[in-house]
Image (tube, rainbow over all chains, first blue to last red; front, top):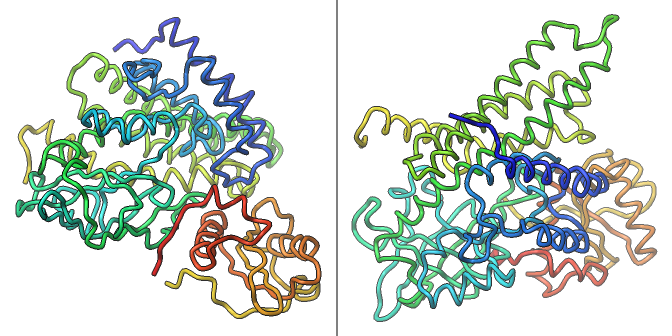
Length: 388
Length: 111
């Protein structure tokens, strides 16, 4: 495959890189090392800049006002946007805008008016509630939240776990079992306003991400109108699954940025730090770590760009997306780990971003489908047929 | 695991503060009647962790602040948000000087 960048892609990459270095990194120097947000005034000012650059709402489809970037260009931008301390989970602190829940683009016109358009205007926030205490890697079978039809309404009861942003959301996309089918054909997606009686955010779930938490939700006989169903009754799993596949490419690309930054820091450190009478860079043990980092970074980048190009060409890209997710998350974790080792004591302090990347990259190997599930997806495609 | 900060109150004075380890964590500061005046955190930018953060509180709140309780945690940011949300849930509003945080934090219904 040809991974050379077009002139336009090169310009976008360079513009994004300059933006990160000149606008984000200087602000970050004054924030708590675990900060997840900019000062609101800085945030609004930078949103104005990204809008004037024509880059606001990167993931919004062009017909809804987005910039219409292809997946490859979007992946290249993700690699650049994540090259700062908070960049893994908060690339550029969100000043490039979000797209809302991708599933809402499949909603009815009335649903779009009520939830999608206000989200794109920044007036509403949504959250995605799929995982339950019974499991997340195999959601089709794990979902135990029940939806029972009662006249023109559905009554939802159950709980969800590890849900991001539910405590601040105006609405939630909730997946519930609505038939006796124990698998993927018995799940329905509901759009539920979070002020609906019976919707409870019961607790905060603290994670390795020190600035961000997940939540646990409980639904007590929550009554939801029929018109709040997204898609077809018992067709919700396809909606959830589509999102999981599409998300893997930018998710993987975002892991590469911190690895590149960590490698650059490690190279600078190895050249300047002396031990036993010579720079670290002259020790074979350090040289090999730097080389292994480079191999990991390039491997991850090739896998991500291959998956993105397949997606752009309209070919099936499920295996490539799974491989990109697996390789990028695991390779970047190894890179940051080695860079901490090269830095020694200062590598584990909050003076440098390495410790934050180390903690947060660990989550990436679990989130959006753990490495084992990615292998399972690839095995299905490579071996043919579907396992039970 | 209890989610509220329900440890015993300690006396907020320079001597007690100086005896604390310079750790990262969260805390509440209260008046004599144990009304919470401030919910805060000691982060990596506090030179001596919770000691520095409580010193700042003592300077800011003055003599009305007489008690405190704390919890060490490296997840000081998310735990701080959790304590603010719990305070909002229990009291309907945050301490006066933290009212601006109400626009930022989420909503919990823990009980």
